[in-house]
Amino acid sequence: MAGVSLAQTTDKPILLQNGRIFDGKASSLIEGRDVLVAGNKIQDLVSAGQDVADAEAIDCSGKVIMPGLIDAHWHALLAGISQLVAMTADVPYVHLVAAREADRTLMRGFTTVRDVGGPAFALKRAIDENQIPGPRIFPSGAMISQTSGHGDFRFRTDLPRTAQSNLSTAEAAGISAIADGEAEVLRRTREQLMLGASQIKIMAGGGVSSEFDPLDSLQYSEAEMRAAVGAAADWGTYVCAHVYTSPGIQRALSCGVKSIEHGQLADEETVRRIADAGAWWSLQPFLADEDSNPKGSAEQQAQQLAIAEGTVRAFELGKKHNVNMAWGTDILFNPRGTATQGKQLTKIARWFDNADVLRLATSRNAALLALSGPRNPYPGALGVVEPGALADLLVIDGNPLEDVSLVADPEKNLKLIMKDGRIHKNSLRA
Image (cartoon, rainbow, N blue to C red):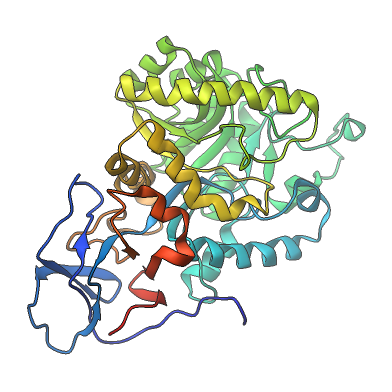
């Protein structure tokens, strides 16, 4: 199929030779080592020039070998379509478009994504079975939302709901699950776990992409939140929560939520609480710039500007208080914007040095994903170049520790893309 990456496979070990290595952790490059891949794992970092019997050698001279990138806040089914298409198109069409976007995601160097809302289970299965190319997916399944919450995509004319009402379009598609009261939240959480969720996503506050829930609204009572957290904990995993404001963040932390998604309107006291709780703060570079998700109404655009101002403060406060920080894009209903995925990473060089930027998108994000515990669909180390780690690797032309903007142009600068030991792109000479 034209435009789709076809993985190159070999029964031989693969030896990436003569490159320097960013291992996902250190602030300097490792020199004098080659990366030996066997099967789907990194077998060893061998001395440069060491002969490895039967290995297929690939010359990486002048290049840097690094872990595949990880996006901790992605919507595999919803990134590459408009909101109108998401709500009106045939569901199979949405999945077919998502499959093409999954291939493009991998070709941008993102070998893993944490999907925080949407019916990604079938896409994940097809990728894992090598039916189609794409990143590893840590799926949340449907976003769990109260009535009038950020995951309630119904129109005013769809109300009131009764016991005889059909599921809304978004619910029937598996995008969201509306649940009110402890029993309903418990049921919907358990349903997503049954479907294969590696973590659970709840809506704990208002947002910009929805029309009827104010940005400052508090969503879900403590009892309802604790029901979701308890059900997830019983399965050895955790809850992440969409929320922007300090009261919403503090409620979520009190209920045991482990990952705050967004949170750009947090005050300093709340940031300290995130740090003290040992929770994660998953931030996105929402800067109301040319790459932002499109917003229609004047009110939505005003909210977007307020969040952009908060974004600057959030990165500064998170760094100041040494919060467990993660990075993601949350490219949503924005087909044109998906191509900026790597560029979105480079924007946080405004607050971090290049090594920290790359750590956030590799080993740090991997540490957040590991909170899934036994629900982790990919046992093995991610986001690092070390013996025993899963063989998700990039070879980049140039040194991203000196020029992190290299990741913003993957078509030009990524010379090799490997996921799970399979080569999906290779423009290097043997």
